[in-house]
Amino acid sequence: MDAAVVQQVLDGCVHEPVLGDQGKARELRRAHVGRQVVAAAEVGHAHLTVRKRRLQQPLDLILQRHEGRLAAAWPARSGVTGTAYNTEYTPVSRAPEGATTMYFLVFFIIPLALGFGAQAWVRRAFADGSKIPSASGMTGSQVSRQMLDSGGLQDVRIEGIGGQLSDHYDPRGKVMRLSEPVGNSSSVAAVAVAAHETGHAFQDARHEAGFRFRGTLVPATGFASQLWFPLVLFGFLTGVTGLLWVGIIAFAAVLLFQLVTLPVEFGASRKAMAMITAQGVISQQQVPAARKVLTAAALTYLVAALISVMQIIFLLGAARR
Image 1 (cartoon, rainbow, N blue to C red):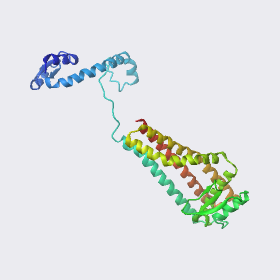
Image 2: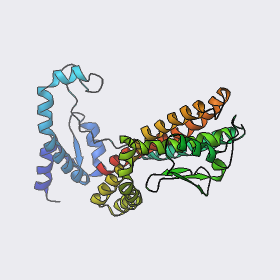
Image 3: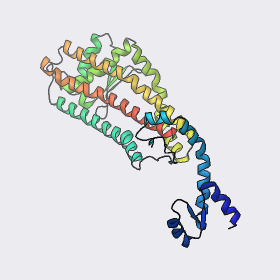
C-alpha cells in the first residue's frame, strides 16, 4: 500500500502514529505505551475508525455542552466521572433473541388458551345445569313459546336446529332456532338458554339501539371476517404493507362487532333471568345454577373481544416494524 495513503489514514485517527508490520507491532506497542501502534494490515480498521469519529464529532460537542444535565439525569449510565464524559460509540442494541417468542406467546398462544378455556367453561356449566330438572317441568321450547306469547310476539316462530349450543334468534325471519338439547329438555340449563334467546326477540321487538346497530354490522362483519386473515397472511409473506393494513382494518370491523355485541348479550341474559323467575319456570333454589349457565355463555363473548384486542395490538405492532 502507498505510504502516503497509509500516513493520511493514520493521521486522522491516532495521535503520533507508529507504523509497523504485524510481526513488529507487538514489540512496538510494549515499547511505546503512550503511543498507538498500527500495523499495515490494520489500516482498513483504522479507516473505519476515522469515519466513525468524524460522525462522532457533532455528538461529542452536544454531550460536552449538556454534560451537567446528562450526568444529573442518568448518573448510572452516562459514564461521567468528574468532568470527563464517556462518548464512546455504542451500537444500537438489538431486541433479545427471546423477544419474538414472548411476543408470539402473549398475543397468540395466551388468547388461544383463553378461547379454549371459555368454551370449556360453557360446556361444563351447561352439563352441570342439564342434570337439574326445572321446577316447572317445561322444556326449552315451551318456555320460549310461553314468554313470546305473553309478550305479544305470537308471530315469532320456533324451529329446531342441529348441533349443540347452536341456539340463536334470527331477526330477519323472526325465528327462534333451538337445538335438541335445549328445545326438548326440561333442565335448568335448557330453559335458561331458551329464555336468553327469547330475550333477543324482545330486544328486536322493542327496537333497542344496541341490537339494531349490531344487525346493521352483520353483513360487513361477515365479509370482513372472511377477508382479514388472507390479506394479513399475504401481506406478511410478500412484504406488501398496504395489504397488511387493509387486513388490519377488516379485522377492526370484526372487533367493533364483538364490542357492540357485549351489552346486547348481557342484556339478554338479564331479561332471561327476570322472566324465568317471574313466571315460575325455575325455583329460587335453582337460580344460581341458571345464572351460572348464562354468565358462562355471556363471558365467552367477553373473552372473544379480549382475544381480538390482543391480536389487533400484535398486528399493529407487526405492521409498524
